[in-house]
Image (cartoon, rainbow, N blue to C red):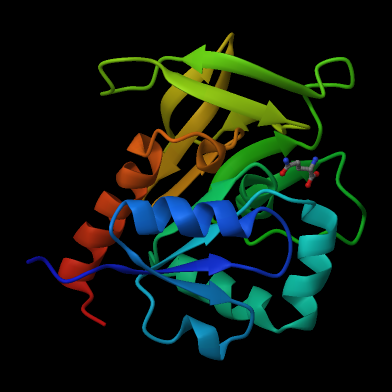
Length: 201
Ligand code: GLN
C-alpha cells in the first residue's frame, strides 16, 4: 500500500472541517494546523474559506504568516480556497488596509468581487483535464482580476479564471470541500506527491 500523504489544514478560522473530511476521503492523513509546531511533518497545506481579514489577524498573531511565506517561496505545496485564495494572492483589492498576503500566487484578487446580488451562487464549470463539469459553489467569492505570466488557468467562469495554479500553489474562488466531488482535492494531492518525491520529509 502507498504511504499516506500528511496534509495540514489551517484551522485558525473558517471552513476547515469540511476540507479535512474531503482530504481523508481521498486517503490522506490530516492534521489541523494552529501553531508553527503543527507544521512539522506535513507535506502540504490547505487554507480554507472563511473571512480573510480575520484569518490575516490570526496568521500574524500565531507567527504562522512569516513561516508560511518562507515555505511557499521554496515550493511547499498549498491549496487556497475562497478566503484561502485571497490569503495567497500577491495583490488584494478591496481588502482591509492592514490585511496581509502570503504572496504565493501572482494574482490580483478582489474580495467579495462577485457582488452583493450574487452573494452566493452555484455553477457547473469546465475544468482542464476533467471529463465532466465540476459543480462549483461560490460564497461571497473573490474575483480573480489578473494573473501573472506563470499562472496556469485550469478553469474559468465567464471571462474570469476561477481555478489557477502556479508551481505548487493551487487556488480557487469557490468551495470544492462542500461537494462530494473530490477531483480538485486530488489535483492538489498530486502536486504534494510530486513535491514529496524530490523533498522527502
Ligand atoms: N468574502 C470572504 C473574505 O473576504 C471570503 C468568503 C469565503 O471564503 N467564502 O474573506
